[in-house]
Length: 304
Image 1 (tube, helix red, strand yellow):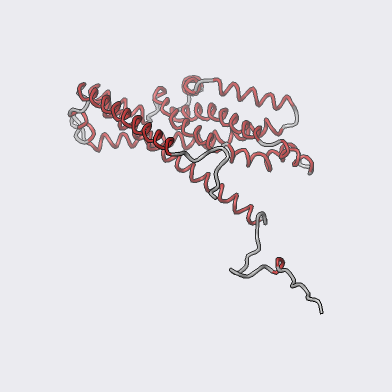
Image 2 (cartoon, one colour):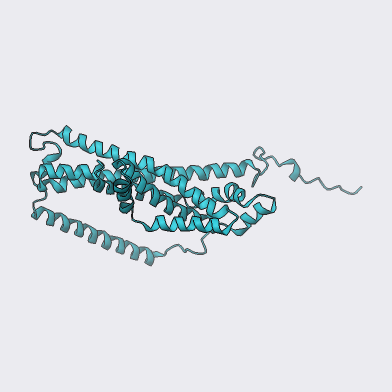
């Protein structure tokens, strides 16, 4: 008899037929919508020779000039994100750990106030503060805005992960003599990060996209490079340049998401290996057809 889940029944013939009809209808509707959008763009002349700016640009420029500028923008975007991401993660985990592990309520309250203030400020306002008040360079202004805001969000994500753990985890650590801080660091924090890993990865993607705000403070990132090329070649070439830029952003975010999925699966495998090594759910290994010695039943004695 086949095993079935309590929460899910295998669909019958009528349900399968209904699902097939719905899939066909929604697929057809989606294709019709795509065709309508493409037809509208074609009527507006979007698919004319303006796309030649990518391989044969005007104004005595070459394709190497266009793609070289885009590569500089990609490099600047990744540089800002690569500096800001580890710092924001470290500060966020530190703030949430202090908020959880400190003994005094005043100290925990100060961590909460700092988190709420940083999370409530717009990223662009933080960049303006670093650029025009502190007088920093565009790169460090962008990094400052990304770090302050995303560190606060990461702190809230980790705090939610710590709060989601069973209370017995913390009570067990305190019962064996660990301090609240050591209990948080050694027992709760690794589990919370593993639980909230998808949310942390989503926030890293947001951080990468927020780096595009750097064009307002004159940072030569990808969006500013696209705008500069548009201003140089003319408004007619806006769509090709920005479509390429959107494709670059999507590709980078997909790569980051895939790396996070691989990291999560690797952490799960390592956790499974650790449990197996600790002796949980182990069974005696014997050759096929041989009964383990501990399971052998002694033969019954027959009477004389």
